[in-house]
Length: 63
Image (cartoon, rainbow, N blue to C red; front, side, top):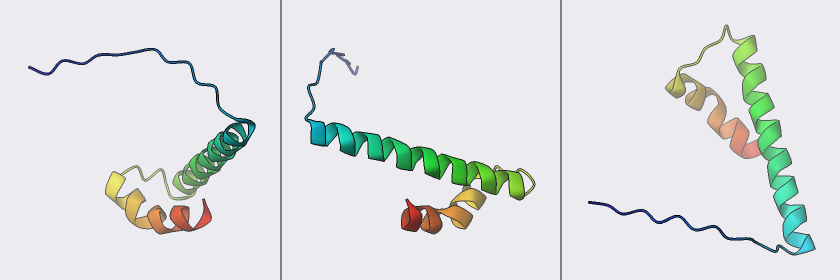
């Protein structure tokens, strides 16, 4: 049997860490919008493998 323990931790990031996190959030948002646009422009193709093959390298390159 596997036991899981959850703890609550409050973090105090530096200003630099906050800026990096905000940039990461923005890039994630941009990538999600890119994928959404692709899906709308390609007849709502939702297959995971199809999307992966079509978008993976472009997302890695751009974001």
